[in-house]
Length: 180
Image (cartoon, rainbow, N blue to C red):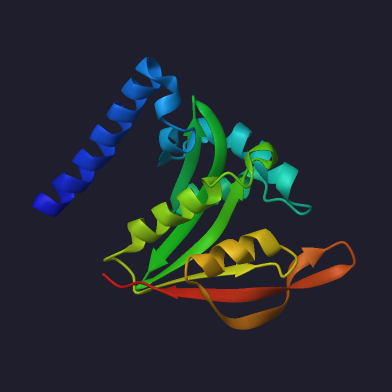
């Protein structure tokens, strides 16, 4: 119980301290320090779908996100100053977790937002699953670099997994073993 309370306290105190210092001493904290990750709601879907459609040639539609809500998946948004900058979705079952999607608004990419969400997902899984899996397009070199930096390893290829302009694109399968 104490460990849980410490985690809650760390999150709450940390955010409050950062917000306070940001107001009093604006140069003392960075935008990254003020990012908040919270549960996605139906009212977030317009912003989430905007990001989805900007980033993907074959985007998910609203019904897929609604199905993720219904399935009880971990659906999160990352926001700054009440603006959604990115989102991520995770399913967990039988000691395994699967990252379904991580996406960051095009104007906000390469600023550590994707990494922050990935770290949050890894922390969420810790103690609940032994391995996190994901698929990524070989053409998404930025995401692959992030996953490798975070310790993910290639475990296989799914042939023709993703729709592509000229047919199908393979998916690289990655996994991260979680140690408690």
